[in-house]
Image (cartoon, rainbow, N blue to C red; front, side, top):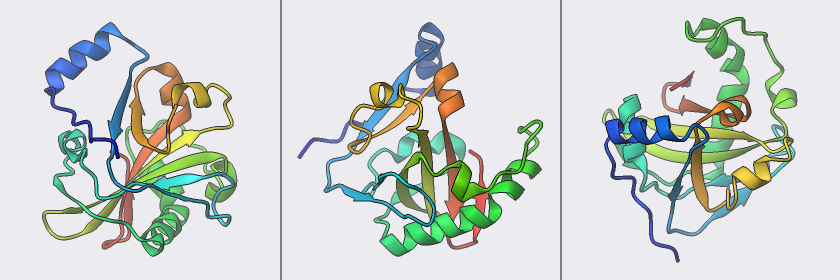
Length: 178
């Protein structure tokens, strides 16, 4: 089993590093058993449920302090159902999103692989960070090597066009853009 790689640099160091390299990819490795799934009702490709996360400090700057938790298949199904019902509302009501066109969630994102990270926040709510990666674009295979072993977050034009992350609160049944 691979040892977990922890991100231990400060936000300012990360921003400096990113300013030097526009197409940066940050990877967080996990050392527990992998779980690959496909949920045909929502997508047509494989996705990954990561075990209790060791990389949550990466999300702490987005107000997601908590402890990693193991997600069940039922948690992932509930996550997909919540996003399916709230996706258009979430994007149309976020002031940072300009000129949003409503989409059929299941159809539009069926070729996006998902990476699921589960954690509990300080109030005990179960949250799921879902990263969507567009594998219909051929370059995704090059840019996300070992996607099933590493939760990778990219910065730069290609990544902004072909990936996004949503935070789903299973307990409160809501979705937010970090």
